[in-house]
Image (cartoon, rainbow, N blue to C red; front, side, top):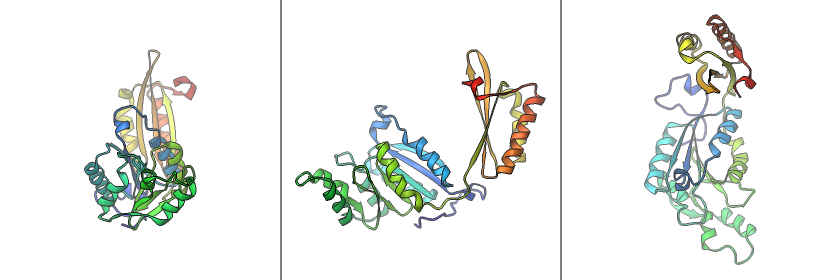
Length: 265
């Protein structure tokens, strides 16, 4: 499957205007609660700045058949798929082998990956467990890892990265130039003292009038006071400005007021 933008079945023309991505977080430690994932938020921000939208995220265990099924489902549906976790030296690091099976290719000892590990480790320290990190699906290209040398890899539209945030972030620096993005998504946020039920109908009218702008409502209840954040996202700055004006008018006409960030902190 080519790395560039593709048209996915089931998406409207609106949703296909920007490349869409999915993150697959792999690891029993995430599902058990022992480790908290911080990669999703960071990666979503970085993708947005590259003109790619994070559209979905899945958290799955270190189970081969689940990894295979999830990767195959996501790579058929999304323009880009990113995975984190499961490419280390231990017995439960099975991501690389599972993805090779998902693509129907053998897992091979990659000469360049092996060379990188040989350079990183002193003589005698590159044991069989560490050498496992040099096995890559045949036909994949490497993703540089300047932190600990063990590379990630790209095969088709799937980018396989480490789960350790510092290493994942360093790997993404190598991935970024490979991504073909659309227009960057911009965000406008308004806070109001109105309750959602007060403005729900009017908000629906504004959304209908601006179908290319995504508008969300997020209620708050702090110190006994009701408030809400209205968030508009889109690529057209002029339309966003119009939406912001309409939201301001709505708040005023319904007897509310626009709050500052400090009012809801």
